[in-house]
Image (cartoon, helix red, strand yellow):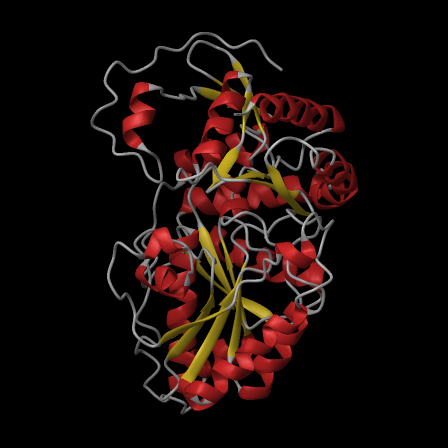
Length: 446
């Protein structure tokens, strides 16, 4: 932990409309972060706060890594921007090749975006374009899952299943259906790692197929481990059954790895961890460790070839009318290449795998604390679900977050669930501090 100088806090907080935040309470009781280093944040007055959430599931290598800082500074002085339409720059191709080597099977092509939300919407559009390219234009239906989070674009909201994210915005995209979620507190409460019960829930896809007819379904999208709703690891065999059903009916399977990508499970990605090759993978967060916004979609070779290589239009005609002004931004590419080097040189994926059992042990030691109704974990992802206060859902976990911050710990809450995702550089000593503070917070929580 470094000494941190005082940094002036802003006097006027009113103009900033803060996302996913109760603005009225925050502006009366702000929690401001002024700088960061390693696993630590610092408030404007210099008070250290241990980051138990990797920022927002994304700062996997910690904060202000010198190799990444240098790469971003050097790139800004060399090439600040290059248009991604009709032109390119060397680092985007170098990064795509590096990503291809990290993923199994024939996930050989990369479409760059700027966030997880854009990655999801891009993958859904590619799925529709692919089905049309192979003569299956009737396949326009998209299947998500209850309680899933796939970002805040209209496509991601439509296939997502978090009610509060959806209910304000009308019917969203037509032709969307949802699989049941996999949380089963009656059979699987306090599971360590993957729950033993629930693989049969994947068979709901068979019922959805029979309801709508397979010729209408383009793709299924799932988080291998549902993160934002409160860490739901998949039941043993569940993802394998989904893969088998989608292959049976010619439906594309998309893994949303915005959270699980880049070491969170102790492997390069969930595809590797579970031994499954989906048709597309959405990425963001850990790709640049949040230093510069960036996302990506990994695409299997037959999909790319159907849309691009086998396109019957003349060679000078655009094959996919989709993209973003900041796709493959030079600063983001430089940051991502440096972050991938840090993962490799510091062996952070293996380090996370080695730390995961101790994380699990300390996490589940909180099971007998007041109000705890479930604990879930996989890799360096963990959740503590609390009983809600009658008539005041989400308030208990929110109060826990505020109390933890006052004690020098940053946690994340979603509903009445505390979510933890420490940086991959964390040590046992850091985990001890996290769970010691959490134990005190839970013991005092009304």
